[in-house]
Length: 415
Image 1 (cartoon, rainbow, N blue to C red):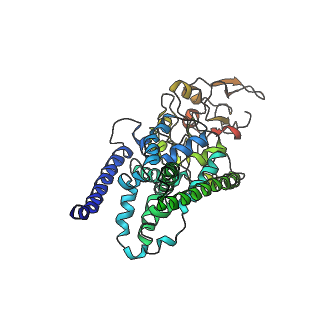
Image 2 (cartoon, rainbow, N blue to C red):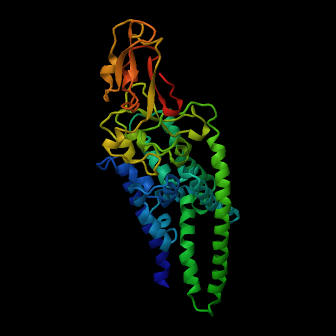
Image 3 (cartoon, one colour):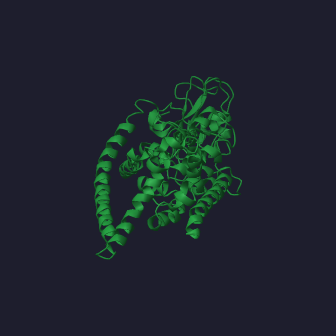
């Protein structure tokens, strides 16, 4: 009896310290205190929720996907092991739940929202648009910590609000996040169902509690299958609806290596890794200028700098596959967009001496050609060489509008 009395407090202390240690490791990785450009990638990529559904939506398995494999295997054999002994967001939620402990008394009446979030994410991932990946707690934690590294902007802070919202929920409704809402926890429960079912079927036939449990799990498996089918259909409708929210907004410039726009805003988890990794600071969260579906997803702006030809850092830190991992050689052939020249603003076309865009282009994609309707010269873009890096736009001396601007490929008009 004495050993049993001290077992639970000992386990509780073990859970506290292991999760506290995990928080320290996560903070070191998210804040890039660990050397290596890969460090911020590890935090969101470690989640099986991001790894599995990101791979399904991106139709590819990458090195980032494999980072989530250990927790995926643990979830198969030890239900919610990571929640109990590793999750730093769970540590925060449990600590804040003590502020109003009596408020969590009716938690049993809450539906299992997290499982429906998993099913909906599965359905939307199958059609290539997993709309709820950003609800992953590790992605939210990584985004929150990383938001305070580097230049702090209003949009960057908005992108980090996921974790504070979890904190508010934990105070108002103690234990609701971990017990009923968290999709990562619910995903671990569902992953453990097959093994639990097998174990109960292997139990002795005269074990009545096992027989009752076997029936419960059988119904749970049946429910999971039916819910998955419903979610797949519902996910297709949700994805189709969200894809239309952009309306007539111009297609945004995405980081080099970004997957198709129709899938990008769903696969992206809004972790902010690509923006923080970019040395030129040209990747920023979208405040909603390109439609509701793309809010806080990364967009590229050439206001102050351009995409360097010797850099592929944004591609090395994407955990979900929204930005493909490319070698430097592949990246130099990746077209982000194409420039459009406004001859009414171009100094050279108006007869003034200027060749700034020609000299600035790192790909030798800008040449001077005779004007079709006059005796002067004008710049022309070689689309076989141009990647849309923005060097010509940044260098262009006209103001306030640039004579050369880079647009996303679907919006480019003939020069």
